Length: 458
Image 1: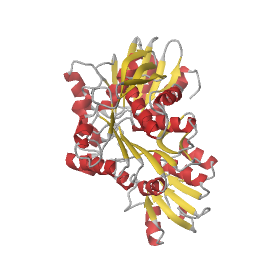
Image 2 (image 1 turned 90 degrees about the vertical axis):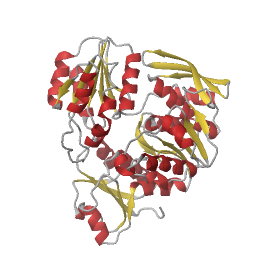
Image 3 (image 1 turned 30 degrees about the vertical axis):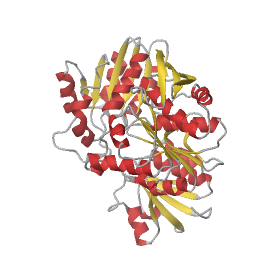
Image 4 (image 1 turned 120 degrees about the vertical axis):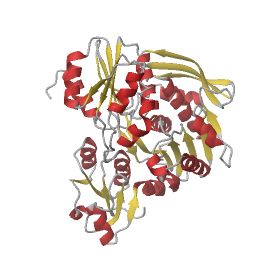
């Protein structure tokens, strides 16, 4: 980016990654406009920061003096009128990932990539850098409570970012440091083959000056063999790692562990969020911070104040009787880890509500989903959230329900979120922990249920 006060227009500005970049450009002095299909809290926040926001897409939304149009993979480039307008007017058009790379590559990037855990790990790392005076630029995939945002323009050249592998755009990044939390066969509509996915992660790592790998992931271990440079390691399941944790303890919503670096104890870790997976996330963030010059004990002290990311085991309602949690979990591994974290809270009953995300993901992983809910007392499966995908013949949430029933479980299939809400109102009991999971619009139902429990009018 060059001169300030230039006009930049975002198509689908309400997405988590797009809104973060829009905030950064606003902070840099650019005039930002954008459009999205539906109104949202993110759009309202962008308006409050000075952006011009439109609902719906139309060619006239692109400013007359627009210098660049930013788009995401969520739009249909062949049909979107704003994209076509930019083409007709010869306005430079840039993918979201390319804009992020342009910003980050001009500084010192600390990138977190992986199928799961990257939002929490990058949030933890951002908080450590922020609270230890590193003044980082932050672009992550969830709201960090301490800055009340998913983005912040800092005063340094350090960029703490979440690297998105979903469309391959992370390969444009050349980070100073990369953390890979795990790799799984996700986003295969883009990669097509396991080999392509492995090679993409290997290429991404080889573009970084420093690489930190979580060896708990089988696919990470296999990809590590492809790397052309040395790498650092962390994890819980293998003794031959640089950074690990021992004596893990769980109490309610808290987690404790002792952190060891190359065999020597370096910190006591206390997290105010539950789950073994979050201890692993903390190790990745602490190791990255260590390579930024922050010792492990200082990072542990900061992480004691980490309360989680938005939509990552986010407590929407809690009293002496009931807890309601909203979580972005949408992959079998994530669902299983979230339920395990909920079980650590020792509820009388754990009610797991899951909205599947994308027909293709259900088709690829319905068998694995059948193995993810065993620790729940009540399992509720809602209809698939399409996320702009066209339906696939024969693919409904019934495929997950059938797999659960094969395991001897008794899931409840709710085809309507309105019916689901009424069920929760009538059936949730004292002592219940209600986990509402999914990457779609299930959060709206969670919010409505929380409002009902608070006695608020809908």
